[in-house]
Length: 315
Length: 258
Image (cartoon, rainbow over all chains, first blue to last red; front, top):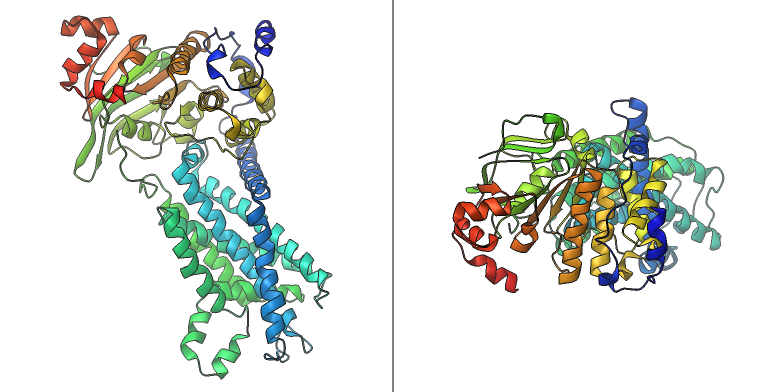
């Protein structure tokens, strides 16, 4: 190997693929030393290590790509901030939020909407990670994933965790904006207590996105799904107003729809957690939805069922 | 002469036995059998629509065949998928590099998916060096030429030291020089690294130098042998004519003209 190095270095880094001596004899390389690189077969430890490496691969890819996409990065923070600054400012006096759990005192409207806006951050990124799945499928990157020697359930779970990790980063970035505008939030330990709640909610929404991605064949369709999924879920939830207001104003149908919306429970879970309270009911619904969504997504990506079937290819 | 049953299982990198796959009423593959030994370069030659891509989708575990068995290095694709996949390196027809990531990040991504751990770094360096792209390791994949992207994909497929290398029409979009180099390079891999290669193509000249040529047509296994054997059998002077005879089609030339 070292023998070849000198001659290769001569060629500058530029294009001109023809000039490279690709066809030069491959220096024989002992296959041995590689045994360490292969997953030691069967051992549970190495399976866990392998899964963690896959998680690291997907997380770092997701995060690095996100950092490269300035527009996406900006909009992830600007979107909830706009709601906070404009919508909430406008409605500050229209909605008086009385003292309802988990709040122990009268709160300002902007403070009320923060957990809901955190929810929308998680929802948006969860769906966008799935958009990436559809994109990957079109780009063939999905094939790379699916030929990795890992069970698909592990791969999808890693993908989900990677997306959720990014969601949570964005949520904290939004909290930083809230701090900038000196909102009266339970900073400590509220934001730390919110972490597990955001994690569960992020997973649940990401799993929902994965499930959606199973049935979406093209990105164009995905934009539609975003509108049909994200906005209804957002509006049919206690993100912007407490649900009793719906009930009070007689909007029974809307109220009932909000009650079967898993996003409702995610927002509640986060809202309660921020104030150091545990909402078991919300937690139960979130966890159950997570299990159902993820289970169905894994089922959908099963090769036996072949949902990944892109229309039969040329040859 | 289908490949099964075969002596010397240990030397066998890839074995496909009586594999069938249908899409609805369309039979994409009908009881196809083939095998690739370690160190052997096998060209899978067939016009478009012959079932090559379907076969590759089955070989990479993307789908499960309706009937038949696929074994990679002796591991059953259906029941020991993980072990089989660990022994498989694939260069897909479509580009699968993440263009926003650097060359080395692309390779690292793959190494992690294969759970290579600490061995990854040295392997990545070695493979990049081997293809002569060490200096471009930090460049974004987007900055590379088509030929170089293909090389990186090949390096990636070899990172985990597979027993079988699947190349699915890998020269699509390459200029003739890069094409010839790629073929030659992969031949040298067979010799020096004992990798069994299955190279799908519809271009006869790429099959010319193969250790064995398998001809697939309309989902059926048609013939197998060295280029010389196929010429002899059909009584033709060139592999191209032999291929046209065997598939009874004149579509190949048209496609090559494209």
